[in-house]
Image (cartoon, rainbow, N blue to C red; front, side):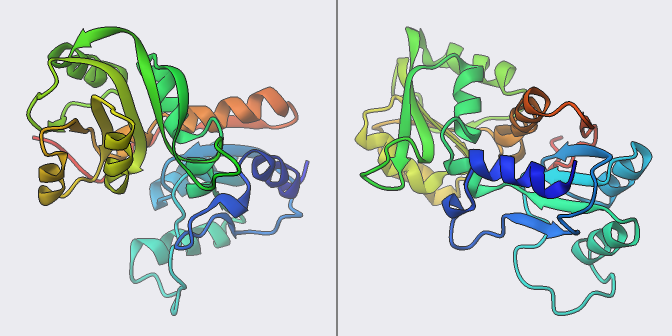
Length: 261
């Protein structure tokens, strides 16, 4: 089985047309005609992940975040991006990124969060167009029953496996309608408020973004890595259910660059 057969399948699920204008999804390093020996799935592609792929005899790495966002002007190993790319090329490894196209895809990144939180009646929070309401960023859904907001925050910590949640005042005593967005979702706060969500769960809120809640909604920032870490499971499930001719492995490397004391 060649790389292009796998990437064609993935792009059938999350079209490259869905990616945001700033993004760099698709095959970043490698030849699409190479035969796949094994595939390693990761959130980020780093030097340590390259080493893991080599050890596991995987020659295709599927990452959520692209290792290259902007064009490389030099390739001399002066930073981790260049070193990762050089090491991949030296070892005949291909790197594929499925980023904002998977964020926007139906049953994509945010849908995985909604699943872990037990949300029902889910819809896209910010559709990309009026013609297709199933493609876009974020999810709005409902809990089966209302729950105390303080209790729900504890549930989030458990279900999303995070040790830290930055949040606004608990202006909602109970939570029923829940908005979520994997990764940097602060721009969707207005969308969450527009659909009367009780809480908006995402990441990368800046200090002044929290003021924008204006006591109308609870913001819960669970961390970028933490909000997207289960994207690996989403990709893994897609591949193992549709391909049986090569090994698919989940990376064991924790690529979260943020540590908590």
